Each structure stands twice: as structure tokens, then as C-alpha cells.
Amino acid sequence: MLKRLTGLVGIVCLASVLMFVSTAWADTSNNEDLKIYYSDIADSIVEHQIDDDSFEIRSSDRTISMFSKDNMKMNINSNTTIKSVAQPDAGAEIKDVIYGYNQTYLSSLFSGVYQLYPREKFSSEGIYQEANARNLYEMFNKPMAGEGVMSYDFSLDFQQIEIGDTYAKVVVNRNADVVYPEAEIQDVSYGGIEAYLLKQEDGQWKIENVIFATNYVPETLKKYMNSDDEDDWIENYTFNSCQRKNYESDTNFNDYVTGSVDAPSFKLNAVNMAYMQDEPASSEAMPMVDMYSKNNAALYAGRYGNNPNYSQYIFIGVLQGGDCTNFASQCIRAGGLSDTNGWYYNSSSSYSASWVNVELLRNYLMNNGLARGYYQSVPNYPSTAGGVRGTLIQFSDGSKWHHSAIMMGQNAQGYVIAEHTGAEGNTSGRNMGNDLTQKRTFWIGAG
Image (cartoon, rainbow, N blue to C red; front, side):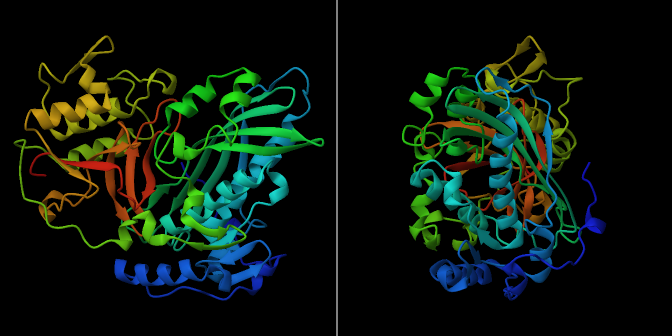
């Protein structure tokens, strides 16, 4: 349950230059307005520089006050045992470095003021550019994230801290849940799992690499989580040997930035965000499954997204392949899709491979005429079918389909999905932004 912090976040004097920022909210009631606004900002970020390490992208007095780093509340939870032989007292400093980075990310995203995490906190120029470029990317990918938020619950759950002679492995689950009381979808999660490799230089711990899980938990992150060997970390997970373009997409975040993150402009058109594109053409009305209800699929997803249905179904942990398609299958079964010899669940020891495998579920639906697939667009469901709510969606890493989820709707921050990502990250309200590249949605039934 979200902690109601509204009463704790009052209007106070800020101990930084952010208190002098002017309001920069345009009329962006539709996609065309957003496109114009962000296109202008993307080309002129340096003209909105506040000080050496912050730029106004989109802000209001209220978001600046609520989400400044001075005011923003973020709890730390650490139930894990710190594994360290050589440096048993280094855990506190390591936590401080990771806390500061996540604080900068969340403050930027929700305040509307892009802030740099300092160069001295990173071991190389490459990861400094990449990590800060991710923060800038997210601000354009999740427009208006802080606007209208009345309460929130931010925390870092430290899942793993392992310290070697020179390097340290850290895995955190970032919880970032917010409430938009005036929106159709009120509860939205911006959280997820993330991993870090830190390096000790001149007696200080610095970020050597960030292993992102932007839309799913990639195999690289799973392997890193399972690694206890410092030599393996050095060989396979430094920034030079393990960049996002090698495990999650065809590009790094920094590839969207022109120049340096210290004085950036942003290649907005290259990102293919939904509000930058023309509206998709109408999809053919094609009821496939009699009596299928997307709404019932969404209701199930909302009920069991955060809290898996252990009483009826097996749960598959992240290191065993993840629970995403198992959960998606449960949802579409709740929507009215009937079990067959090709797709079924009887018990924790009797279920089809198509029930739990992303690609096999796709093949089953498409090859048996049970769904129509749409690449990089969403079916234009009639109003009687409830819009995108209840739509099955799958994600690609550019070479294979790897993740399944259920769309719960759309708000000013983009598409909202329900998903299971394994041991962590189960949610019925995560915002995935507007980008539909390397994604496929499915029309099942009349609605």
C-alpha cells in the first residue's frame, strides 16, 4: 500500500538555486502539443541551464518543491547480508553512492529538472555519460511524470551487496510508486530492478557500470546476479565489456544525446516515442474468440499483478526463467481463452511449454487463429472493447521475444502494464512509457 506523504511535503524554502526556476508548463493536452513542446526543448536544453549540473526540462513550483533532493523522501531497506572478506565496513559508503544516483534519477524525472550525478562518482567518462543520459532519456520518455502527483512511495531495497578486493556488486529493487488522483489510472509504478558494479579508486567507491532492466530483466543481469566471482565481474561486467546496446537494445542511452550530458541536446525523433508519431491506422475489427473479455483479463491482471496467485498457479523465479508469460497466460485465461492440448495449465507439475514461454505463446495464438499480432502499434479497439486495457503485449531485445505483459491503459506518462518479472518487479501499474519499438500487441476476441 502506498504511503500517503502529502502532508509531509509542504512548501518550504529550497537550499539550492532550484527555488529560482521559472514555471515551464505549456498546454500539452494532446500528442501534437507534447510533440511541439518537447521538440523545442530537446533542441535547446542548454538554453534552460540553471547551474553547472541542472537543466529545466519541464517543471512547476509544486514539482520542484515536492521532488527536490532536499525534500524528496526515499527509504532504504536492506535485508540482505553484506558479503565481504577484505572490507566488511565498506557497505555504508557503497549504499550512499547508489542512493545518491537513484535520488538524482527520481528527482530529475518527477521534478522536471534534469540533474547530473557528479563525474567524481563514476570511474570513467563513459559510464558517467551513459548513466546521466539515461536520466535525460527517461524525462523525455515519461513526459509530465510529476505533474498531478499527490502522494508517493519511494524506496531502495538492496537485494545483493558483495564486496571483493577492488570491485563490488550491488543489486537493488527501486520502488517508485505514485498516485495521480485526477487520472483514469491513478496508481503508477516507475520501479524495477537494477544492478551496479562499483570500483574502488583512491579509497573511494565509484560506479563502474550500471546494468539496466528497462522493460524486462535481461539474461545479462540474471547472470550477473548469480555471479560471486570478482574476476568474472572484471572480465564481463565493466562498462567497456558490458554496455546496454549489447544486452537490451540496439543502442545506448548516450546515443540519443548530441554532445555531452553536461551541455546536451536530445535526438527526440530517433527515439520513436508515441507522442512523436502519427496516430496508427485503424485496425480491422476481428473478433477471434467467442465471449472473450479483455476487461476480465485486465481485472485479473490488476488483482494479481502485485500479489501472485499462489493458491492456483506455480510461481517461476527470475533465475528459473521468470514468471512473465505464466502470469500473462493466467490473465488471458481469465479473459475467456480456453485450455487446449496446445496451451494448458493443470497443476504445478503439469502445464504446456506455451503457457510459460514467450515465443511459444505467440506461436500458439497466431498459428491457431486465436489472435492477430500488431508490430509497434496497438490495435484500435472499439469503445465497447475498452481501448488498450487488457491487451497482451510482448517485448523484443532485437533478436528474440523475451517478455510478456498485460496493458492496463494509458495516461500522460504513456502505457501502463501489469507484469511479473520473476523474483522481483511484480506490478499491476508500471509505466513503460510510449515507445512501442520492438514490441508486439495482440488482438484476442471481441472485447
